[in-house]
Length: 370
Ligand code: NAD
Ligand code: AHE
Ligand code: ZN
Image 1 (cartoon, rainbow, N blue to C red):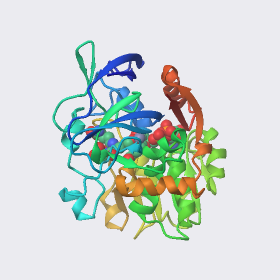
Image 2 (cartoon, protein in one colour; image 1 turned 120 degrees about the horizontal axis):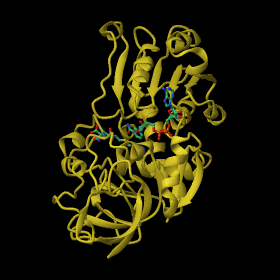
Image 3 (tube, helix red, strand yellow; image 1 turned 90 degrees about the vertical axis):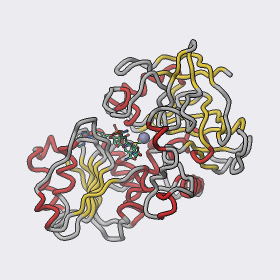
Image 4 (cartoon, rainbow, N blue to C red; image 1 turned 45 degrees about the vertical axis):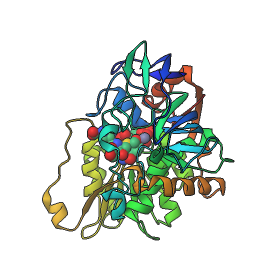
């Protein structure tokens, strides 16, 4: 079949809207009509050639929602007509990682996913006979995409696609990092670096968890108002207090250091600040931001010797097929706010504007409606 898609033909080039050829689902796979997709900073990072796994030409996008239109042989957990959210972190419930109950990082298809192909080693997308690669196992910047059955979460059919697509990455990543990775407890002091599409969901999660102080740090003062609306109690702008004073400012604000901090910037210098603003003896810093290829983090080992903990979180620690439907229910029951974070809605033809809005700091999330 044919599908309209925004293709990344090369790094640092605008996406091109073209009609691709798409092969139907093979055994264990499903064809999904994508109804809406968010544009996450990770898409921009890959498009900029910063991802060590980045492959071109490819169809980016990993924050979608849509409808199952066809199922391959042997598919049992979803049927034609089901509403689903694609999962870049699948959940096979059979691999060592899934069975461990210690991680959400299912390993069943991770190797082929990282190479831009389906589990059988081939791509379903092509353009004029040339292979176009998949991205994060999702490729939601295409009106139709093929996914492994284990990489879709079946969700409430009443939920609006142009809102719940954001649960495919940003909402789950931010809220999940608070409740599943850090396990923030009521009364905790929390510091969030980077008040974008992820950081604001960390703030929302921290408020849900009953945190006391929720301190946001961002170099863009335009992010302050939205963050306060989502539960931020204090705002620190490194450009105002001085970048070399950020840690001491945060330690003073939290009476000795944060119980939990979150990096939602992807900047390795910020990651260090996030660790070092944590409380001696117990403060935990969670890295969510994705750093560009070749970057490394550093701190004095003494920071860890004296009890600070450095952790990471992918997809908020959420087990996709189990937890994503629940988060959709939270949205439907008004327990979480997604609507106000979607600042822009654009048609696929204008998808490059979504990247401009992100880089200019003007959007929180742009959603593309097909
Ligand atoms: P975004 O562009 O919406 O937000 C980033 C925010 O960080 C912006 O508000 C920006 O002003 C701020 N910022 C930039 N440099 C800063 C600095 N030096 N100090 C303080 N603030 C600074 O991006 P997003 O979509 O929220 O994504 C944030 C990060 O999270 C990205 O690195 C993205 O790749 C990553 N991410 C990780 C996961 C995961 O599972 N681990 C999931 C989604 C996104
Ligand atoms: N491919 C990169 C790393 C990119 C990365 O860390 N991705 C996050 C999700 S970001 C979503 O916006 C993730 O889930 N990582 C776990 C995984 O298995 O990819 C690299 O450095 O090679
Ligand atoms: Zn993302």
